[in-house]
Image (cartoon, rainbow, N blue to C red; front, side, top):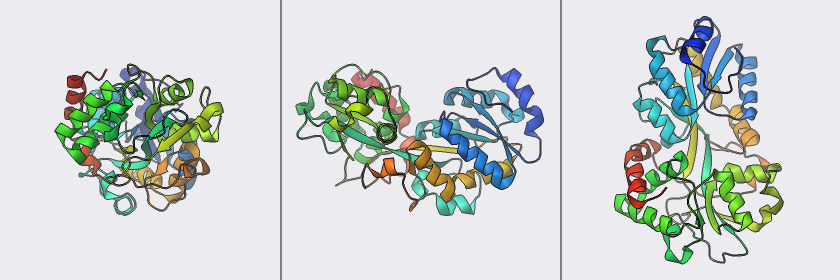
Length: 339
């Protein structure tokens, strides 16, 4: 089946995939990962197993809604998406199922998988504090310090609707409590250099342009600019310093990319085989080399671009527990006026 670049009407695509859904040796993947480099993952899996991947790509929320609407007739075998919040949203929507896999249990750290084995993490991105080396002599060393009044008018961050920020605040709730998280969010709002806007790369570009002096972004956006030319960033990247936060405490927050088997998967065993492949050394190395991410499996070698960021301590908080804090995090954002 041809690659679908955008969400398409359910009635049309369900009919198109119906034949493939019951075909032996297929797996139907619903994915919101929009990286061309993932093609290698799919082709290598097919080469090794003979299982054909039929892929539908779209926005995560649209894909989840689509799976709900398709119900028992859904052709989806796997949902692959980015961030713990979306994985939890899929679980809460009832579109995933629990599975038993000794491979996944052994390979994926317990804090990077759902307590009911409905989703598993396969790659990670560290949420890093970046700063302008010419303007900031004492950068914040942890997330809570971003709220320090001495950084007033200096901080850039994405909007409260962004899943990366939602999950970070949820982790702060889990690690430090709801009241400390509310004080932190209010303090960061008071320190904004401008209203939240744009993606993570835009926060880094804002450092280069002088719009702000401190920004928060996922590691792979910066590592990509080290590896290849990113307009408005790579030429001035030496201006930017970075901090892996909270190294004397919980460690750097990690955003997750992962997936699970669809609740009504017609090719369930093939789906499990694909998830197990994503936990293999080969696939884990490619997450790092192809998309500048950190492997979920401990001990897998990093790509050169990711390795340049240096060693650090990662927060090993249980992401299933973090996911339960998401409604509280959104409430806090609304209360403190984080746009």
